[in-house]
Length: 587
Image (cartoon, rainbow, N blue to C red; front, side, top):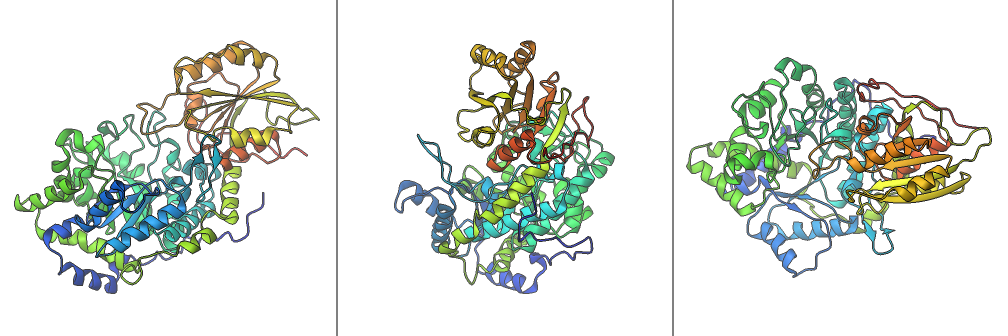
């Protein structure tokens, strides 16, 4: 596939970082003028950003009243916006901006583009896709493609689409180096286990975001890659030495800081090499101030990871965690469960002399300066009529398709089953989709691409929510098929405790092998799935279950597009970084 028209080329290594909005004298002067007018409690409120959905909410409803009170009564400084359709998000943001005396900053998790959060979902019972913003493959797909131009394009498109909706702050890119295959929460969200590759791609994405008017946020400092505990559920530990941290975890963060990244998000994990007191990094002055601010030279906006996560609240409780986060140097407290209680706790910390008002002022000044930098003091509303011309366009979708195509990795193919179509062969194929019931799009695009191209196609869906599915009929179908494609959409999520595949899936693949079936496992979820099914002869990694990734995987298997990518991770003990096989297009 040729590069789509309009692809922007990032500048070379000589690129001059954009001037930090926190160093702009005009923005700082405006921030100071506003700061002088704010009572202490309103200052603190600027540092608290609650979580809200981007869904449609009727004016006057109980939910709208609750959200509006956060603005009118609590005077929060911003929000983290979660899932919703693009138009609903833009309309809600405009309504909240109108309700606020000071302009609000809006942020969102945008790891795979604006489509990571801002899509319309599906209409039931017909499972009609309702469209939305552009959704790219997982960041590790960029690591597989190894192309900084594509990483820059993800940043550019994310910024343009998100700003059109009223979002100014992207919680992306993920700068964690995923060097532990058992990591249950990062995985393919990372670029690579190679810190140099992660740094190059991270810098490219930062530049793409910030060159096009959005603040990039590198996460999760000082590195969430080498842990086997989900920090949403418990306190994770990274036991690496300081020397290892300097040459591994900190490399992408330092590179992005040097490139002018505007924000950093913290890690709710314990790193004894940096602070032996047992507190998570988010709450540690040694990590957030001494290391990040003083040693690495970061002077941007420091944003806590969600303050409702077990990694920070289980030991100290929410009020104490909030005080400790401010004392450690955080500028923004993200997603507290109790907004009023969090503001009250930080104010109480002043009376307790945990920090002084100047410390609060320093963070408020950063938040206010960003509001001026984005011109929100002049015009805080977005043009809803413009959204459809910017968000989710075909041109942006073509970039997602290009990334997906260039990222497909053929990690193993011992029986030379790939491509399916060669020497005029049109095999009978059984395509089994293994996914959660809620994943309505799993397998749909993949099977649609296969249909009509192979000799015969039978499809089946197996629910990953079923602890003991009956595979007997599928095994019978497998015996009547030339090839069995097993597409796994089981992913690493905040709801899982480990990175391992479900036992039922492992047993099914083993049963297929025992029955003599020719099996190709396609991972649309965790790239480390091979470690749970090590006997499978053919293993393909597609880096996500988006339509683009499903389409690319099917075309790669058919041989209608080349397979050129290399592993950006190792699959020990089977494959090193850079492993994988290549395939040319079948003519």
